[in-house]
Length: 506
Image 1 (cartoon, one colour):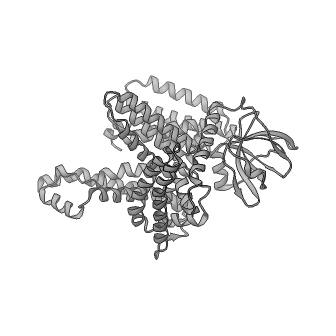
Image 2: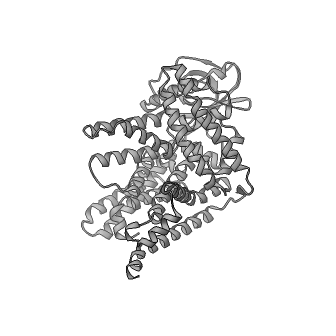
Image 3: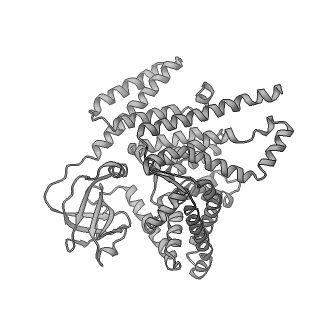
């Protein structure tokens, strides 16, 4: 990266150093105070370096590594809790919608006395199936440390679980629990979880096919509990799993709709505040997955910068979003959704400027040929974005899921436009909750579109050689794959920068 790139995107290198520090902290168990001392020393050296830019940059980057290491060590200590070995009576607040798994119901729960998050399992019966987010229970059980290993243990730690418990029948009861010791953030999330349940109930009564409902619930409100394993597998083979996981695509649609509604130039600041507020309300409504938080942060930064009439640097915005998320939760770095989200967006931001036709520097003949090869700019853009996103995420998808979807581009040609239509019509449907008759009538549109999307996905997944399975590269091989991706980007960038000179000489 040259000096000009560093000036344009000054947060990229500090963000990378912060990630390196967090990754290192995952594998060490050092005391926190020496790391804090190193951080203080290099922050001081950064301030004293003055105009010696190289020394100042090295000190700042070392301080970022030390900060990441310190954050990871602190998070690791916070997640390590010594629980009593004997049974006790515990008060819990259910903080997620229970999901039936075999003979038990699995749910997130907050310990009423401390606000800590655990994974709770209760034997499934008629009484336990009535539990919803926000309910309080008193249970006789034993809290114990997390027992999972591997990727699932990483998932638990990333999402803040500090323990787990199992409750048998007749050893728990409903109870009104005080939320005094639960943080305000958790209370807000519980409120929005209850609102999401009400919205889901509105559409559940008017949809007969489970597959249609599962797509609409996942794409609109982030509830994937109704998505079957077979359906997940079909979307994964077709390369459209990102449609079931809320991301920047979904928030981008909401942002465009909100921008269209609030487009008065006289009230620009008020409009941006309303748009950003609506975006974050939606983030809370869908459960705050990291990919959605990333997109919301980028939109918020973009809105703030646009109000100030400052230049917008997408890569710098992406880096700042990563820094904010990692400062709040350093273990987010190890979340698969975080990695896939940032990898796809970074690849799009890096590769798209290199494949976008530079028409001002091309002669007429080249333009004519470009128009012949690319008669529809929207189709060209969608193709390039899909390829760039696939380049960014393919190594990670192979590492975590052992698969590469061959027909992802074909699937996206139909799936993405359908997703835009589904999300737009579903937002209108949810806003019509006050008029149930009209809501039921309008709901037929997204239900039909969801059925088309499901059929299209099934067809693509059934094509020959639809997926290359059994890959499972090692971490070293995955890292080398990204080195190759970086080299490809650098070669394209070099060719792009030197192309105008060749055209002028010709």
